[in-house]
Amino acid sequence: MKVVRNWSCFAMVFAFGFAGTALLPACASSDDPTPGGGASNAGAPNAGASNAGASNAGAPSAGASNTGNAAKGSPIYASECAGCHGPEAKGREGPNITISMTAGIGSWTYQQFRDAVRLGKDTDGTQMCFLMTPRAEEAVPEANMPDLFAYIRSLPISDVVELGSYVTGGSCK
Image 1 (cartoon, rainbow, N blue to C red):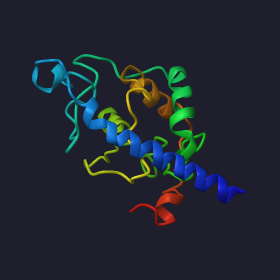
Image 2 (image 1 turned 135 degrees about the horizontal axis):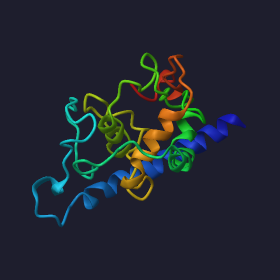
Image 3 (image 1 turned 30 degrees about the vertical axis):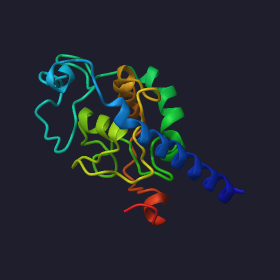
Image 4 (image 1 turned 180 degrees about the vertical axis):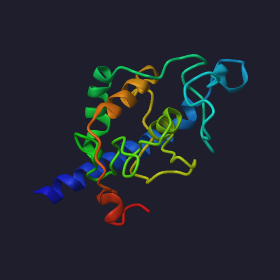
């Protein structure tokens, strides 16, 4: 039975991810005449961090707090992340994303986390596994992105390296 559930989960993630990716170019335009949509990360926490290949489009504006509310991030995590990363973010099909500095995303800046969720980009700006599909604004509203980050940061740390079955099973590099 587990094989059937995993394949149907894979098929659903692939179908929605593919459909969402096809819609992204149509959603990328802005009516704001300011270059870059007027969004700036200046003055925001981690503003000096290197984000090679990262995009600031749609990021919280200057001075915006990205500390978030973990309680508001919990239902978003449950619906968008737990299926692959597990209920405690320790990894399952997807990798460990606890804030472990050795086995998770503890060294990631808010911007790097946002780019991973919104754009499917790794910390070096490269595309993540095709199964880590970019989450559209409808799935994770921009205003709730700091809440999701805060929720993950509130979970117990796991220093166990878990790459996830997608990587170890050969589905991703």
